[in-house]
Length: 154
Image (cartoon, one colour):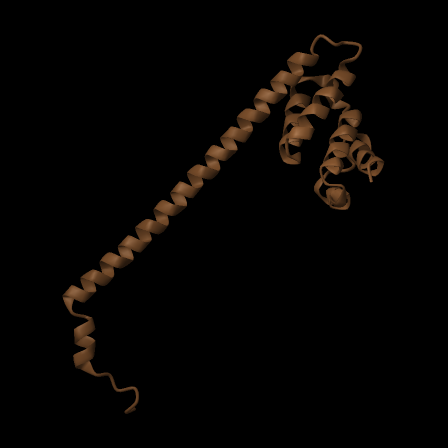
């Protein structure tokens, strides 16, 4: 038991009220810093989400209003709009805008041609990743339009 014998004078030194208060103060400071960091990070993530959501809403409204008057060629108008949009935006935002447009316009419900062009543009951005897009897209949706679009480009 000699090796494990506690030197009481050293223990009293470390448990002295001044050291104890300093230790408690440091722990409270660290905990507060951690909580503030988590809150700030959460606010940043929320702001990013809100901006993306506003973009999706604005773009979907723009596409719907642009194609509203093209009755006989509405599908071609939607394909053209998504061709332009998907070239300049990432896949997640493009798919979110497509879902919003589908909620607002029944003509976008049959999205086979739109899916072709979105998949084509994604492959065009990086031809090496066409196989990985199979896993990130719901290739069966839009009557297999995404799948067909992926196969057209490689």
